[in-house]
Length: 522
Image 1 (cartoon, rainbow, N blue to C red):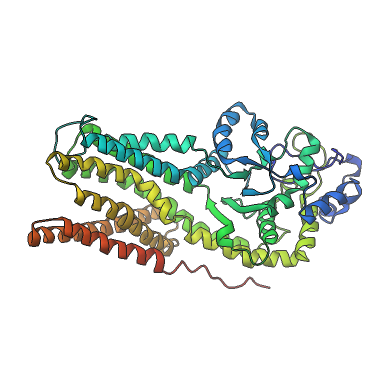
Image 2 (image 1 turned 90 degrees about the vertical axis):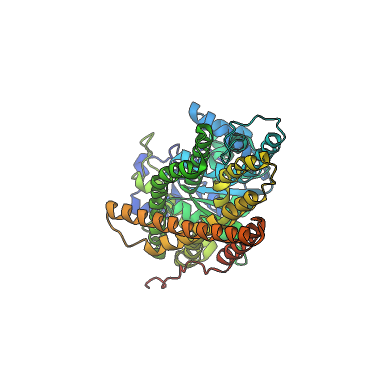
């Protein structure tokens, strides 16, 4: 295959790049869109047939990079400006575990942190909690010295051990998944292999087990991004389970939850270092610092809820004509060489017509099937139960340190253990779920920035009120247990059972956010 064909545009290697042409023969944008570029490159028809057939040019052109290699190597190579070297860590494969679809308009660090959180946060939480428990046992056995002799306060090493092990595992975890990352799996140096990788994109999508969409505001407006999403669904066939094969995650989710985890770890660690009594001073300082942080988080969540409606309107009226292409945005001129570029739109239209019968059928698929999947996942699956629990794991470690003073008094800290499970695993995730539904209902109540901040404060106030109500109920049941049996354990077990029923009922039985919309105008 000639290397005079498709060349990767260095500014946007994820998009179908231009074909160099003689400037004297370069057609206008309108003629390029109609496919008259076919006469410029004699290999164009071959490229189109390969792309439309969803077959690779050769078996070893389908490549994947281990997720651990992508996560550990990318920052260093990015800092050196040598992302092309990532290709050396990819390997040929018959099947890719995950295809990473993203817009190159999005900041790279946002996408990196999102992938880091999605793939490594769960094992990091497990390892962090296990090692925090080991520190708890060692402190209880007097192997590790307590930080102070203050009773009813945190005295152990669990938060410190858990946080350090969490972030080390987050950065160093070696998962076994193979992912397709365009800049790593398509050779960026050898023009021949570069061209073959691009025209084999259909085969790579077809051989990917799942598709991870790193969504941002520019994703749905990019023709190539929507083409990847539709091509993946087409390759899986009409019987594909979108919930199992497709994951849509906004790029802000990973940084937001990871920052929340880090902030909570630092705050609880500072509480232990300063040795302030948890009640009342420790609790007052924690609440005072949490309020502005929660207000910012609520503001971001409200923005996300509004963006769901924006995506719905964008995709509902999606047309190929108005979708953006890198070539059209550049005026069909290579920004680096100044030479004319072939229009991506003409190639994609040919493939779309081959796969879906016509551009109208493709647009109908995007407006209905793709829109339903995108909006449903953005509205209901972004803040899942396990993502919330992973962000809250420092609170579990804090409960372990609080339990040490009970052990010092020759008491088994069952009540605090039950409280840790109750609040970290049941009540707080349930409160977050309720607040997410309230945020979606309130998303359009404010217009200006000041009003949106006030609305965010109101959302935080609702959360504090819910937490205070549940905490009061918890304390009331525990005190009643002490009054009746001179033992708080039955009350703690009762609270755990009731909170479990409440949590399961909310997360399993609460109706999903209704994202149904009227069909687009004819």
